[in-house]
Structure formats: structure tokens, C-alpha cells
Image (cartoon, rainbow over all chains, first blue to last red; front, top):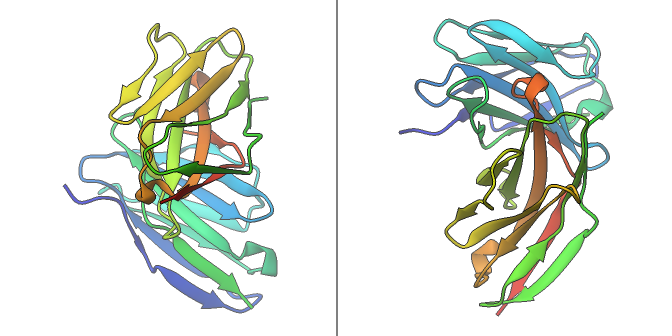
Length: 112
Length: 115
């Protein structure tokens, strides 16, 4: 079975731009979660989607948003990028609501 | 609020030796899950082992075992017979029953395995 895939793997943007990251979960998995990893703040939960509904949201500004499609693929969007948004963005999927999460390779975003 | 504490920023171990990575947690929930993930330099988080709060036996997965002491709120990872490929960051994480799939991570421990 293929693992979680994330595209793109690397991204360079400038302040004020917006960006969309994509995540394809493991086949059959219906839950997709997003995390931000930075050297200063560590790993922080962004949000989780299950069957196209956002079930939980972390403490991030409204510039961070996401959605999930009927095939369970998910996207996250960051608008009006700031330098502090530079991070590794990790996506994780799980089969049911509280199963183990399996992570993708991440998207490394650099904001200049 | 839930919190994970990993007090060892870095650990060194020789190949073939065992190593213990410490993790303590804080939660007011009675039902929760504890996880360990490995993150090599490539960035991907690799699931290693899981322990449920009601599991009476310590979890084991191959060379990985979890030393779960509920009263002390600790969930230490033991890696037996270390290999060079074990060099990586290791993260302890917790999921509360009310948080759906939200994981709260510790700050991680960097493990270096030397020949």
C-alpha cells in the first residue's frame, strides 16, 4: 500500500503571497491531520479533517485553512504569508477516528 | 492542558547497546494514547510504538519497547541493540480521548549511534 504523499516537497514563496499544500492519505484512510514543525515552536497541530469535515483545529490564525475532498485528499492553504510561516508542514492520515497516524514526507516551505 | 516533556536534548549510544529515551506527560484525561515517532534527517515522521492508557502490559514492537509507568506519568522508549540507522530525532506524543486525532508532541531527543 502506498504511504501518505505530499506535494510539493519544497516551496519558496515571498511575504504576502499565498500557498496551497496537498496531501493524499493512505488508501482507505478517512482522517487527515496537518502539523507545522519549526525549530522554535516544535511540532504543532493545525487541524484535522474526517469525512470532509473539520473536527479539530489548533491555535493558528485564520490565515491557515484547509479542506478535505470526497476522496479524502486534503489541502491546506496559507494566505498572506509571513516570514514566520517558514516551516516543515506534515500531513498524517489514519483509518478511523482514533487509529495511529501515519505521516507523509512533509512540505518544506520557505518564505522570503 | 496536556503536555509532553522530553528532558534529553541529545543522547549518544554505541552500536549494539540499549538506550532509553525519557518521556513524561501531563493530562487530566483518564483515557489517552501515547506514541513514539522517529524523524530521520529526511523529515518524515515514522511511527514506532503505541501505548494506551488502559493497556496493562508494556507495548513492544521488535527492538522497541515502551516502559509505561502510569502512576509516574512516564512513557520511556527503550531501543535494544542500537543500529547506526537508529540515529535520528525521536518524539514522544500524546492523544487525549477528547482530541480526536490531535497529537501533542514533546520537543524531541536527538539520538546518535556510534560504531
